[in-house]
Image 1 (tube, helix red, strand yellow):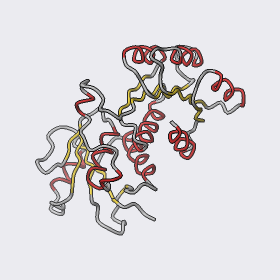
Image 2 (tube, rainbow, N blue to C red):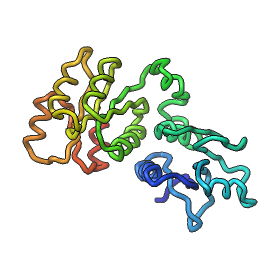
Image 3 (cartoon, rainbow, N blue to C red):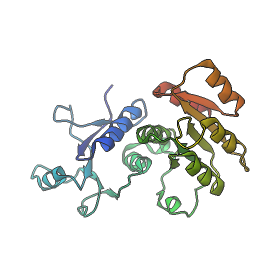
Length: 246
């Protein structure tokens, strides 16, 4: 079964294209799924994601063949008046997914239908939201987990690349879920987890991620108070199953 919504993607850097492709792949099996539109697709695109900083964007927007009724989500400055939504970099991909879902997802499948801008500005997290902290020096791994978390309903997410950053964030804000890579560059990963687990008020759940698949790592994760372990490279099914338990 193909995607229910084809999306025309114009421009974007390689790392952003990777994030978009990941979002499309992870949407398969949801009530509303997304796929990359190409001229070979069986239907016309229903949405366009346009990088206004790319040369191709000017050509696409000036094309006489542009469908005036096509919904457009633009990234960058000087968006055309016809743009439905506009985002600025650095991109927060869960917000982009939420904007897409607000257009196409059935109302009963939407987790929320409010703008996250107020919470991002520090006004506070709406009731029912789970606040997550991702701790990983690898940008690609953080982007993957962001996308997976967004599809699981975790849309309020902070990031840290080092243990020191993670501890600083955790001391000034309570997190319902912290996902920690053992590969943090500035301290031992298990020591970081011990400090996070010992914080008051207690973090809701701590999940450890590692490329080490040995049995003693799982035992140490359990003994350290972790709620689960994710192996790298990430297995989508394992991620889904663990997030469903949190």
